[in-house]
Length: 149
Image 1 (tube, rainbow, N blue to C red):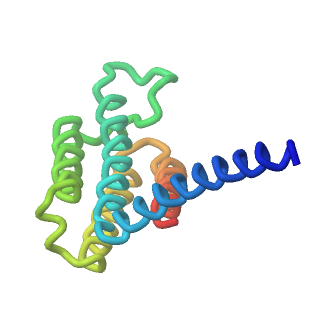
Image 2: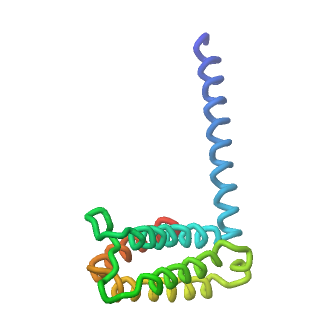
Image 3: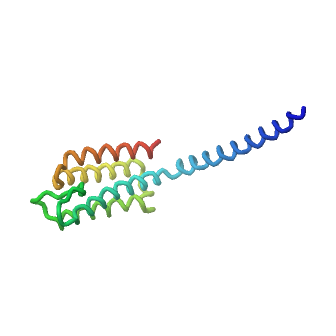
């Protein structure tokens, strides 16, 4: 009987902690269900990181071994940087409250079109563009799947 009360007390404390944690998790799930646009904004930020890395690599004066994104010799640096800036401007939209006025399907279509255009840009303007675009697509696809689950 002496061990019964401490065991009950510990069980109650553990149950209380579990209930609190479950409540936090379900509240987060409810918030995500009410506002699915946060996952699109997060995905948009991830894409923007790629584009910023491209711009940074393109700004390097020499084609050193550290640069992943190297512009093809026949391509114009200023036009390429402007095109990358345009991609960033399009993607920033998904982080604004204006994006919440669009449906899930509209947002996904807009994101898909932006990704298609970015893929085409990489293939046409970056050395080893086919390989880099394939790697980028795989990474972005896995990132998108993480956000959806």
